[in-house]
Length: 379
Image (cartoon, rainbow, N blue to C red; front, top):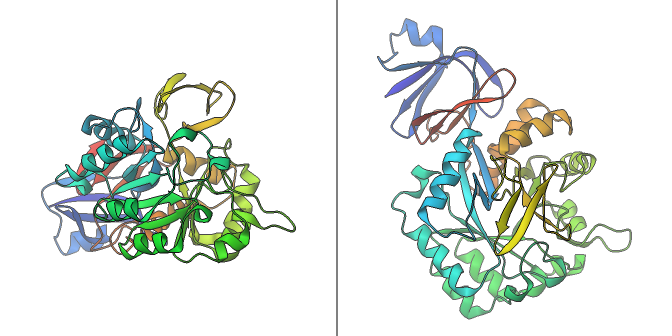
């Protein structure tokens, strides 16, 4: 056991000053005022001085394709996940869903086998796999390879379900999938997220089991006066919804409007690719050369190809450009993703009994250190 002392704590609701956080293995065993910890002589010999820092729940990135110079689609290997996790920890992210975009069948099988080969994925920040495609709408393919897009039939669904213990989210186009197939996935506790979709409002209303939406506004049918589309459905039915807060994918005013409508159902994702956390200007985006220009990741034709943002940069953007409070920005990066995944009983708060995942922030919200499942990491 060890304790972090004299630290401000944002528990997911409010900020308390001069606190002590007690960590026993991978769990927060207690949070209390320093005065109480001292008077009861509870402080262990191993203490980390947190004076001047704010402890918040570690960030949870539900859509992370790559970062730190690597991309899961181009290198399906444990070393790729190790680099992604190490990069995440530098920027406050303690949990994530490695995200694998549209590919041929064999690489998809390989990435599932990779996740299954990890003995304790939670200790390395992995909460499960996010398969973004290949069961999407060609008209909204975005940066995905059109020749790899295919339908999700019952046989493929059965294969995915047989690996449901490591697949957390599947992004698909609901208009391209039968209800029976969606039912198979949801019954296996795989979260079905609508994305890369060009359906009509009535297409979505007709389907049951859509509990999440992938990168709001991007690669989906827009809200119009006579056709609400995917965006209108999301605003109306309010599934848990991810949004990219880099100022490139979505205008900040649109993020503000979405937040006003969706509240705690709106969470932040990075949709980051290879250059995030680096100074790279060129990279391989799943077999196609891509570039970074003024922070925008794109192909030669200008098509956006992922993002170069980190979660802490997104927090800054939410505060500085979207005008949400510091507390709400932190919730959008931690508690709300945990709720979207159904994991908020153990992740997303700094409270007794929760997993010990912390981002330690300076007064100007720079990451000074992280705690991942109880293990300390200095930035």
